[in-house]
Image (cartoon, rainbow over all chains, first blue to last red; front, side, top):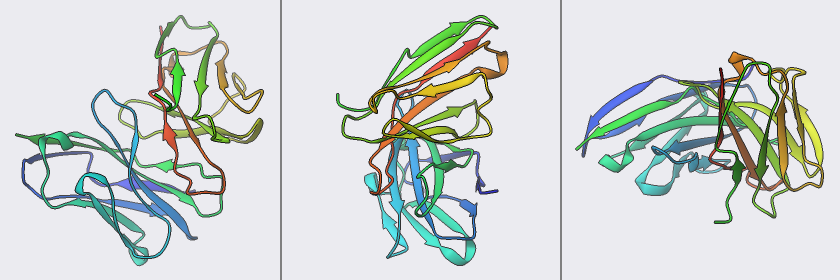
Length: 114
Length: 114
């Protein structure tokens, strides 16, 4: 069965530290990949997405992610985090040409200390 | 606000009662998805509609759960004979079909079964 694994469940960083959140998926075919973010008290919103082309994708608020097909990975990065990045981050995949239903990882809670 | 809306935002019910949730998608979106999220987990797919047709249901969706989208606009999710294990956040998302599969999420309905 298709699944998504996020390695870090809870990450605590100081402001200006660099961030990398791991995401691996299991699916043998072509996939579309997403990172969603949920800020405290808000609903899920899209951070960035990958469908095809350049495996390094840039999203909102200075986030980027790199798709490494050989490793089935789509790790999220940010060079310098801010206190306002405190949120829960979810990696998700959907097989290309499919129904579009998203398969989510279990999420990573990021706490940024001022 | 022209985003996805859900009603009610919170519902407390006693075990054995029936509950119904409503989702209003973004008006031009023809796909509508329901997900369930429990504490510490990512959202899990329940079902989705394209226009008024329910095209896929997860095995998670027992026969106590039913969803409708009668005119291809809003959708309802009903849970009959609620159980404590149904306590969760129920999320609705909408998207355009045959596009970027970007799903826009609503704020969710938090169900507590006592």
